[in-house]
Length: 178
Image 1 (cartoon, helix red, strand yellow):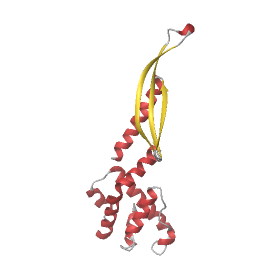
Image 2: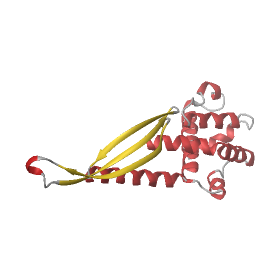
Image 3: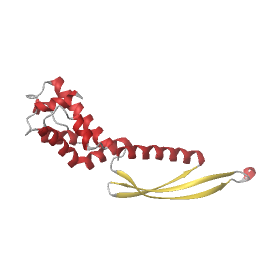
Image 4: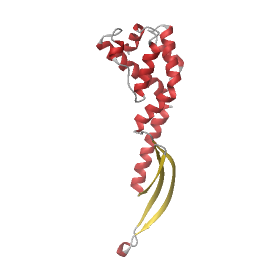
């Protein structure tokens, strides 16, 4: 990540603003603009410093790396620049983590509030009366924009297994972000 080394060209007074704008971009707001930093970097350097800074912040927060690893990644920078970067990441870590989680899980402002399940045995009629197929009724309470919406789903054994596999995969991603 040689773009991180280019941060040393940025005057220390402008560094917090730049880093917070990068975090804003990660969180779905606007990234810093080249025109505001064109006197520090040329276009190629700008693209590199912006991309490497985003990647660094995402990796550090996503992997929850300890302080020692942060310092190792930032070796080429002055102590002042390292301090500003670490302070920004620590201060906005929950916000960055939420944004990364939303991107990974495809969530916007929706989340699961509560769930309930029941197991039923479906009995068919007519000549297939001996058919017995287990079904699960899954009731979900989804909250979106502070409004709760109940959703009921009936799943057979195969659909239930697919849901469980998807939830386990999502859980692994969440655990990696912690």
